[in-house]
Every structure is written in structure tokens, then in C-alpha cells.
Length: 156
Image 1: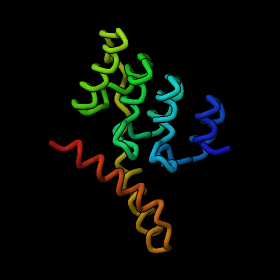
Image 2: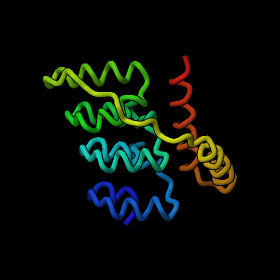
Image 3: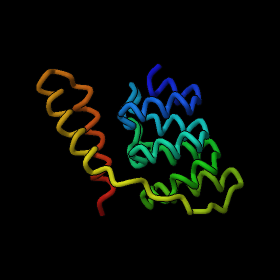
């Protein structure tokens, strides 16, 4: 069972096991989604919280540009939105509020703690993508390119 499978099954113990064993919390599937996005879409605040603690990047977007926050808001998962909202860009926050207000939800608390600094993880992922690219694995290079694109979108 992969980290994605554990998240999709809603198995917190299996997710914890993968993360404790050093699994990357930011892998992408074929649609460019991460485990955090899958947990947010399913409304699993416990999984979202654990993935954030493990260094999952809440600002990554899938192939169509949706972040975990947008997925959670589109499905009306307010508790998940409360965890993700403080980490989102202003435009994602605005869109999430609009989506939630369309569902009749107008008040969100923003008291979730920020995710830990994962700059070392980012450098390690960059080095891994470079090596994978040299070995002919385009998947890791594409993942790094998406991370870099999301970082460019964040900067004013």
C-alpha cells in the first residue's frame, strides 16, 4: 500500500507508518495531485493535519491549477479549510471563501499552526530530481517543475 492508497483508504495508521519511514509527503499522481490534495478532497482533517506536519506543501497545485484548499472548499470541508487557509495565497483564500459562501458557509477560524520549514526537504527533492533526470526518469523532473511553478506563483 502506497502513501496515496493509505490516504484514499483513510487509514491514519498506514499514513503515519509511511511518513515515519521517511516517505515523501509531496509525491504527484498522474493528475498532478498530492496525498494532501486527496485528503483535503475527502474531508479528512486528521490526515491533512498529519501530512502538513510531515512537510506536505499546501501551495502545490494539480494540472488544472487547483490547490488542496480549493479542493476542500469546493466540497464544503470547513475543518480542512481551517487547516489549509493560513498557508494559502491570497487569491486561493478568496476563491475558497467564495466557494464556501456558495455553500452557505461564511465564517472560518484561521487558527491552524503553520507547517514546519521544509527548505532542506526542498533542496533534497531538487537534488533527487536532478539525479533522476540524468538517469532518464522524467517524473521527478516534472514534479520539481510543478513545485518551482507554484513557488513563482506565490511571489508578488
